[in-house]
Image (cartoon, rainbow, N blue to C red; front, side, top):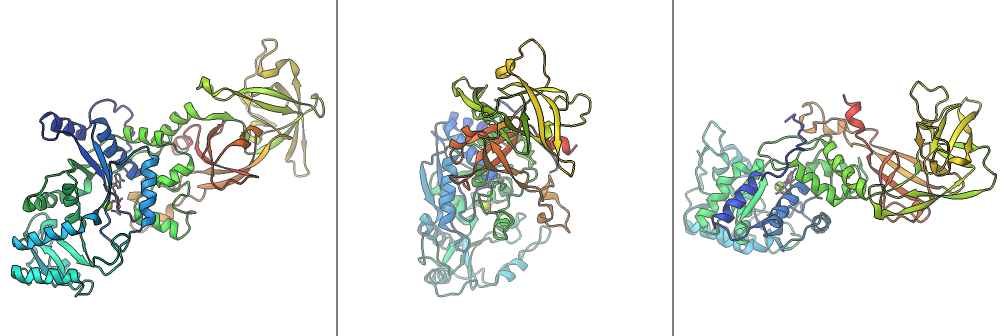
Length: 560
Ligand code: ATP
Ligand code: MG
């Protein structure tokens, strides 16, 4: 598992599922393809689901087919319409439209009738054993299981009991319906698997109409079959379920969908189990499902990711047949590639120190012209006000610089981006020795940042005019966990032991006035700092920005 794979070279060759689809279309096995994305509405979607969505919808798009969105709502205890709505929003946001919106619960009637068919064929029986007894008699991989004492009930008795299970005569757990296959089958999943269990719980769609609910294995393939899904794509751990998937289709003599498995997406520094994500939310380790540090689609969206960057990521990850762990920096790389082309540049100072330009006229303001995006001619330009007092980053000044320090220091000259060359003359300190003010002179002939006489300055730094700047809250987001391989942590540790204490730092920044007009979710680049997006916590008086990503991969350096 400990393999970092950022398959950047995997280019235009077909993945194994595309090969299968092309061959099925060429042989005439299918005239067109129909895929489905089958989430259980028991949580919010995460980046792993995004991979599955891009795969299912992407395949259909590529081959002129269609994709259904099917909610796998077979367990009323954990499911809710809140999740249904968020899932639809997320799939749409990723840029996909489903041909049909279906629910496994739409098919409860048909699934029930098919269970009766299996009973009548002598292929299913009602078992009165407790769950514990069923578990204990399943055997192990090397030891056969033992038949239930109820296995040889007559067909009539089974029909009668199953009808009464449905009618609500029995309590939860009193009985189950099981397939009658083989208690010594080498594949444990075929040792008389459970098809139905009794759950007296309101279902978010069918209310109290049903009190028996089909198990995943019994429902999934038959739902695929009802919808005529041609290629049912799921993650690798379901390969052992495929014989059972096929068994039902064969015994019921229904449309033969075929299941294909691919490696699930795992990401470094990330947990994706719904149980863990729910725990992070419920116990306030994060602010909610859409906390911008969460790997949920709504979290990633709020952080400032674009659907395009996620689709590119899914494409680059490719479709593998073997489990691996993808480096989170690949996702960030896809984001930078996309935003580099689209995000306008602005200046913002996150850790300010005041600079007074002593030879600049008091009370004067002038507007300088800045290019919005050098990568996009159509992005145009804007004006930035300049005046005598500005802020620069504390890091861009050093009183006693080492060699090759090209930013500001006493006696040195730097370029203020789009403005002037300035030279530091002296500094003012408070009683603790902290620098409170840097004094500089400027060269009026260098307006626009151009050298007046061919003399060179090595460094260019960003700035904002103190008098014109607005204050903003900037949330410096980082990875939620400190450990790359979250699935491999030691037994005696908990995943929460690896929460990154520095995953969220809030600072007050000074931003150039043009930023004030931004709307929630707008994405920008703060020059020399990173990509940021306007958070929904912003108010009319104060913008809040999330750092989506730094400009370069800072972790690659730190962790080596
Ligand atoms: P659980 O079954 O624990 O509730 P799940 O992550 O399997 O969680 P589902 O709602 O059943 O959630 O998943 C919907 C679809 O998304 C399935 O086809 C599943 O295989 C796929 N999927 C889930 N997690 C990943 C992942 N990490 N990578 C790729 N596909 C995934
Ligand atoms: Mg699942």
